[in-house]
Image (cartoon, rainbow, N blue to C red):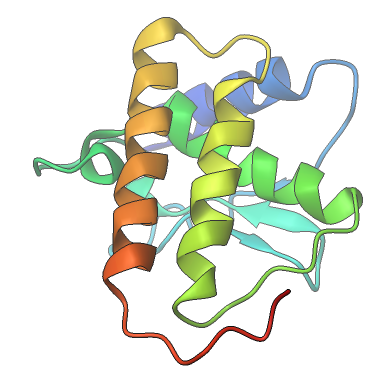
Length: 139
């Protein structure tokens, strides 16, 4: 990712966060193959080289940089609300679906990105439904 692209990401991040200052770590953005992600231990979003849309038919693959950052911001906001994220299948798919839905409601997310985020949530729900599961421990 170029310095100009990082600058655009920072501007979009500030717009998404509004008056709340939130950490976007750009230290990995220039590394090929680095991933954009929320780091719960640090309470920070790490910007990766994959923040810009890639190639693919899935909503996740074609998500804009703004949708990508909105999704990661939603992880951060959900953590602040006390959500305990599952990190293993099948429930990680539900968490990712809920996060994309949450992101679709953030201020400043344009309609096209909102549609991609909702489509991403749908795909994650299909992933959860398709995953072999043991008898649920939930009531």
